[in-house]
Structure formats: C-alpha cells, structure tokens
Length: 270
Length: 299
Image 1 (tube, rainbow over the protein chains, first blue to last red):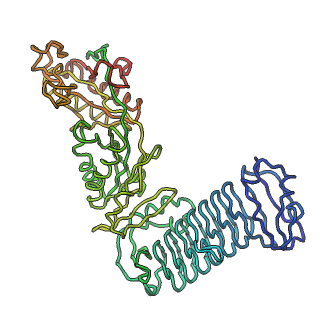
Image 2: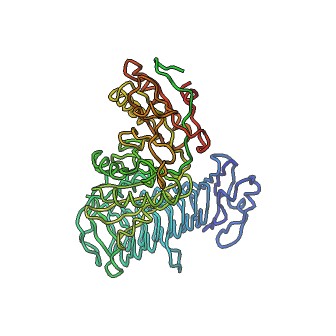
C-alpha cells in the first residue's frame, strides 16, 4: 500500500480521538475507505473524511498526521506495525499500548505517551507530558517493552511502574521519575525531579545529571565500570539522544529503594 | 592430481553432522580475551572424550563486538544439543565468568536456543539483573571486579565435524612445518575451526581396537613406523611423518573453504619443502553423511 496523509479540515473542534487509525489497519484500503473510518471528534462519532482531508501517497505503511490547531488523542494507541508521523503536537496517550511499529511526533506529546506499551518505538522530538511510559489510568503496570525516546523533557512520573523496556529523555525528567519501577531502564540526560526511584523494586535509572543528594531510600555503592552501559548505547542505536553523545563506561551506583528490597539502581555516569 | 609437485590422493574426507554454537567473548584487552578463550576451549579436542570440540574462530576488533571491547568468537561443536548445552554452561561458567573483565554474548541467533546466562545467572544469588535490549536478554551478574554481563541464551546450529586432510612429509620437522602453515591458513577462514593442539593431530585414530572397551585406536594405516607390517598402509616410501588437520565447520562450504586453504598452504611448500602427498581420512563412506573429495575441493 502507499501511505496516507491526513490534513485537518478548517473548523475541526477537538479533541479528536484517533484510536482507529493504525497503518496496519489501513493496509489495502483506498482513500475512500479510509475516509469512512469512524473517529471521535468532540466526543461524537464522525467519519474521518468529515474531519480530515485524506490524501494517498508517501512511504508505504506510513500515516502522516498534521495536527496544527487541534488536539488529537490516542494516536497510535495499540498499534502493532507501520509508522505514524505526527507533524505538530500530539495529545494524550500517544503510542499507548503500542505493540510494534513506530510513532514519531515532531512536536510535543501530552500525558501517558507510550503508557503500557509492549513493543515498538515512540519518538517525541519535543517535550512529553506526565506518565511517560507509565501505567494507563487505574492500571497496575507500566510499559513492558519497546523504546521511548524524548528529545525534550518529560513530565512527572516517567517510567512509573514500568517493568521492561527503555525510556530515554534528553532533557529533564519530572518528580517521581521511575517510581515503583519493577524493571527496565529510564535514562534522563537533564535534571531529575524529587523522589526519583521512589518505591523502586528493580530496574535502572540512568541520570545524566547527579541529584544534589541521593534520593531517600537509596544508598551509595560507589563508582564502577559498567559493560552493560556500552551494550545499552549500541542497542538503542540512532534514537539514543544524550545516551549516544558520549562514552558511558563508568558510573556511580545508588542502590534502592531499600524499603522495597534494594534491587533497583540509580546510575550516574562520570 | 598434483599441486606444485605434491600428490593429492584421489580420496575423500568423511565428516559428520554435529550441533554447534558460536559465542562472543569480550574483555578489557585482547590478552584477557585470550586468557578466557584459551581456558574455555581447553580440553576440547575431540568429542571422543572431551564432550565437545572448540576453538577460537575469529579475533574480533572492538567495532565488531556487542560492547565495543576487544573480543573473539568461539565455535563449540558437540554430538547433541543437550551435550552442547552442558558444555556451554560448564565452560562459560568456569572459564569465562571467572576471567577478569569478561563478558559473553550469543554469536549465533538462528535455531533452537540453549541457556547461557539464563543458567549462570543464579551465581548472582538474587542480585543478578536482567536487561532486555533489542529483543535480546542479558544478565548482569555481580562479581568481585564489577559485573559479568552474559546474554541469556544462544542458538544451536547444524554444523559439520570431522572434516580433515592428512599431510605426508619427508621428515618430521618438514611435515610439522607444512601442518603449521596449513593451520595458519585455515585460521583465516571464518566459520571453521581446528580443535586439536595448534590445529594439528599427530595421533589420528581409527574406529575400534583390539582391546575391548576402546572405541578408537591409533590409525595404523598412517603410522610410518608400522609401514612394513600394516598390510593396508597408506604411507609411501620416502615418508617419515604424517600429520592430520581436523576441521569442524558451520556448514559444508566452511569446511570446504578451510580444506582448500589448508591444502593450498601446505602444497605451496612443495616437495622441496618436504611435502610429499596429501591424503584424507574416511571410513569407506559408510559412517559420515558428508564426503569432501580432495580433487573436487582443490579443483
């Protein structure tokens, strides 16, 4: 199939819920069939063609979505394959429950980007909101696989309750980053807010900037060489952001949260 | 057939299907890579009594290893997947994990998998950490110089064991020089290893023995000292020493390539260098699935 480009029609009042739009689902459909797919605009079901101009073309299995002037939630939510490129900002739940494929946002993303995702790549070139890669509301489990790369900063509770996968934030991360983590890796290049790793059971927080003091519940295990950091850098590859910008062989290790058994770690590269 | 005046006997090497895997071992320096791999591939000359056959396949520069450090890839062959799994656990656990600064990764990804770090992780006594990166799982096991990083599992492939050729030399030093030249040439061929000491076998064997319980005994047909009493001797006049190169490979092409490179290197020395003929070991073609005819290999 060829790809599709969606351009919002004038006067579309958001928010628009785009759960139904995954490149895999569009495969084999013509532009007319795509226009008949029902999305939610302002809480009401509407054929896609009423809200967007749909144009065929572009890269195979790729959906280009222009979002200037309105809020689009659920972009790529539950997607298993293909690629979505958002030209503009994304609303909430960008790439949430993602299982495969790649979602790229050229602007900012709202809350719960990559929440509960199990595979694939979420790439945010601007800032991300709260609950990046965390659990969906009222659910117990954060992301279980895949990669989230944020070129800007992330809000509060990035990686909360995650149990596998990798989150890379080039900028700062908000408070409670990696709280209640069960496993996985969160790498924040900038400053990290208060209570990093709070309630963390296992997993790795990699902080490009050392906190003023070890977070409560963490003990200092000294500086060491870490072969696995080189592995991490090489596997993450191109979207590595700050991780790929310098050698990361040596880091200070804080172990915690001791209240949860002390199997988690905060690594601060030197 | 003659190459550079050296007779290539019209015969074939008989080889067998074997299970193999490839491991990549890294360390801080090439010397510590060698320390780990030398230990790991020790006592791994023949499945007859060692459980597996193993050797370094390639020395890897940092840009070709998963963690960007110096490394080497090791090929290990065994008669079954279960035996291979046992040997991998023992050898990586006792020889690689124990070696300072080492890490161990899967170098083969296609096929059913056997445990690597998935078994060794228990050494971490609960402090081990799993990391899944790019669909592959790695274990970080705390050890006294930091962490032993080890991939969770490695795939098993269908390989070939027992490829061979036999050098017939005018004198023992000349035969050994030719064998060493052949071994050096084969080491440059990826996908094939020479599991014996220095890549050379001086005690080639035949199946069975006059003694009960021995499954192999000296290959009397190639023993120069028995030439006068062995009715089926393959040692012509003027040959004082015979040495064999046994080749295990990941596929037929790898064995063929290695055989060709080795014979070519030995034959390049010519009769002036004491190389009289090149023969090969077989069992009449009844035991092994793979036959490497020397004339076809060298054509």
